[in-house]
Length: 395
Image (cartoon, rainbow, N blue to C red; front, side, top):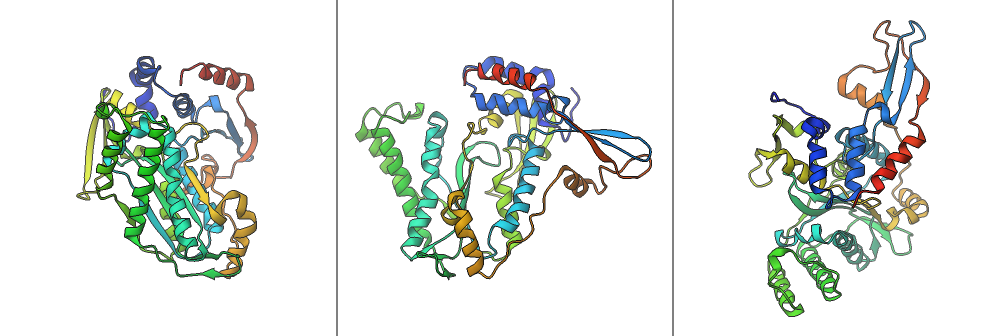
């Protein structure tokens, strides 16, 4: 195949039967959620998912806009989900200073998460619990939400947690808003390290932890505890950004971490039928670096970051939690002298116009605007049989 630029992930999966060959080779290891999301990606923007039909009332010209898959694995759908989240939360989240904190793990622990998928859920509870407990000791309750990431920019496994907290909070009886909330960096690092290690220790002691091959020499609780003590004496990275009061900047910064897939297709610079090359920004030297992988390794790195079905990659806490938001969020807005803004919806129409500078629903023949006259959905029988076929796949 001729070298291509700006190639789509779907093209790579379909070319030379790359996905089919990969699936047949590793189907005994592939989780059901991976199969479902890859199938969604392959069907995205095709007649299989149905379409909206538009017609020009002036000249009769018509066009079909095919439905999208809405999978986090899909780069275009991830972009749309991000823009939708930003539009919604410009109105939802209070205009007050926020602080963004990234909790990371030492490299020695990364392999644990691929052998123990339940571990990610256990560890994900810790960052918000630390901040909430720390704040309550100061007699206030901050608003918190967090995005879970399992990948680094180079697609390697790197579980980490992007947490955002208000730099103030409600007092414990919800009657006032306190603006000053200082988080001591070293205390935060120490508590993070202590609680992660304790969680892993408890899971091992309960027989709920599979050790990676590199730790095959560990055969007892004492030897495992000794290895954890080695990790305890290492320095763990918790990155605190400066507090920011710019509401639009805060929301857009947060949005880019919440809905994006592991790989944006704009980063893929070359595909020749056998190898894929993509760019990433190296954290260490701040230089753009190119990685070249064979197709099998590229697919392997890409799909392992697809979460299990119903796993919540975005989590809200305290008065932003769904069960409390309806009653407590209005109190926050009232105490901050804020009012809810209109929620500007994000559509195919608006995204297309922003990206290409012209209206996709303007007739190319007479420049009149086309109107929606039909919506076609795929037959439910086709979808049901398709899902039943997926359900027989070994996860």
